[in-house]
Amino acid sequence: MLESHDFASLYRLGITAAQEGRFEAAARLLGCAAEANQGSAGARTLLGMVLARLGRLEAAVESYKAALAINPRSTQTHTKLGNALQTLGRPREALSHYESALAGGDESADAHTNLGNALQLLGCLDAAQAHYQRALALDPCRPEPHNNLAVLLAAQNRLDVAIAHYEAALALKPDYYEALNNLGNALQSAGREAEAIHRYELALSLRPITPKRAAISATCFVHSSDRWKRSSNTRKRWRIGPIIRRFITILETRCLPLGVVMRR
Picture 1 (cartoon, helix red, strand yellow):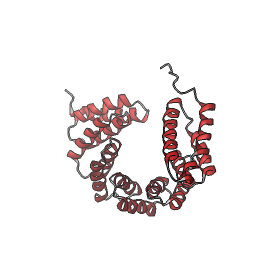
Picture 2 (picture 1 turned 60 degrees about the vertical axis):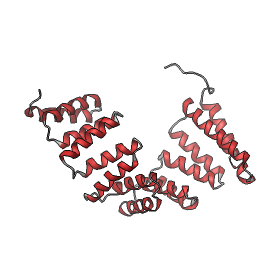
Picture 3 (picture 1 turned 90 degrees about the vertical axis):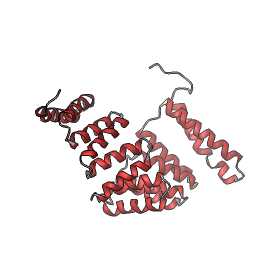
Picture 4 (picture 1 turned 135 degrees about the horizontal axis):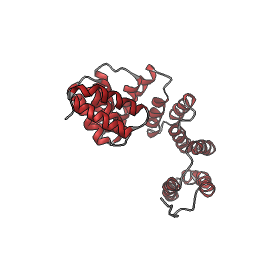
């Protein structure tokens, strides 16, 4: 049975282990620290962060909830819990915690971006857009609100404005893979194939394609091509052609033939 006087040592050792990237050890130490001091919300929040880093999101959620039972006003813990729930595909629950963080005084760009993300997933697009715009007003140098707002605008077929926001995100963070890929998609939808191909190539230079990703992407392209070939809109029917041809070239030069089983 751990005693309360063990807490400080375990807590410090857990933090040190996490800082050194020894997350399994950090999880064990912080779990023991939380057991030694049942009233420490901080130990439970840090334990949740380490568990989330390890991909053990359900356990992280429980640790964050235990921390909030001790200190329900912690905006940091509400935000961390919201992030874990969002990753687990539970945006409605995440929304509640993001709102609690904002109500608790976290008037940051990140807080508004998180809230916008949850609202967008729930289909509340006007509210999501308002929070992204608020995030940009608070910190115009953050690329994520630009990208996420652009995703929303592209879904509404407001391609010119979406492209401008993707480009703004990339001006702030040139190696922003998601924004490059999303910009390629928007340019393709706008009929600007050469520009789209250039953005896809830049994205591939950041994350070289693997056989598994190639198989998934090729399947998506084939399905998309089949749908467009059946379309009565002849302009759209041929728009994807150069994209597919370029992608096939990439597959031939960078990947093993599809269907080859790799040794693990």
